Length: 70
Image (cartoon, rainbow, N blue to C red; front, side, top):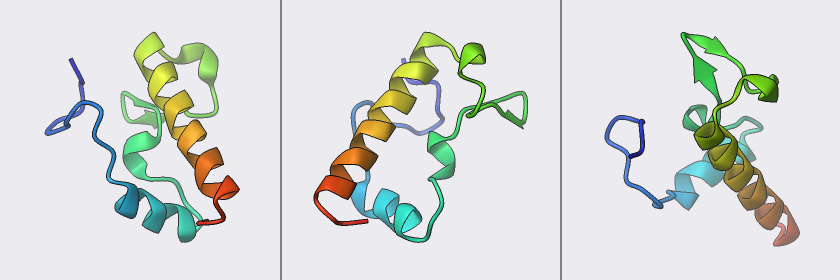
């Protein structure tokens, strides 16, 4: 079960994601946040689910860069 409210499993809004990335930031829903604290840069605290989501996001970022869309 995806813990994000109103989320659809496996569905990525690439256009919205690219908007954030082109603006020089990451989409807030791809940041790892626990108890109101951003722990994106502390992978030792991530759950397996958070790790998988982050790795998928980083893979999409690499794909966008390889296709020169960001």
